[in-house]
Length: 175
Image (cartoon, rainbow, N blue to C red; front, side, top):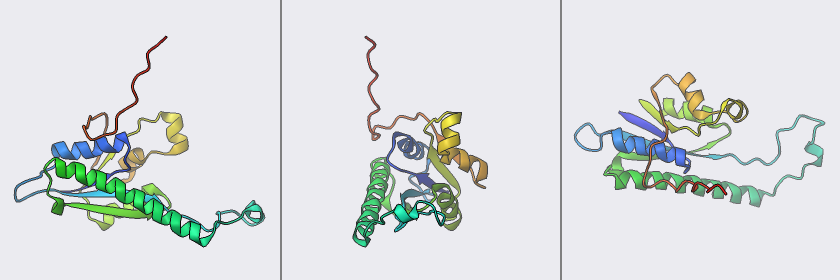
């Protein structure tokens, strides 16, 4: 089986990695392949404005800034992928069976869908931020989108605790 794990370093994406830790095969002849998907957003020279809009008032960033920003975003995506890979290695997975997949994106949902096809993925594992209806309507939801559009099983890992995950905020005492 070949899993795609969407990982951005958040608590919810740690839940996705933890799911794979618990349920994927890490030994034997039929070991599972784990692909860690980590995306970074494309940088643009100019905004996508219609003619006559705000574009004349816009001062585009320098080529040096664009290059440095792209490098910075890629470094963050690599770092996130390394965190997930290290977590799976610590759980006993063979590094040869873990593949990073770093993708520059404009739209995360379409990039994941393209990766599912390109990498011939059998199942995708994502965390869920637990947005309500209103937030989901405005922000979108990768897990919701995949559940409705992917032609393969989508595993939405919710609330699993991982010792590698960043600590959640401590509850505040009521005064």
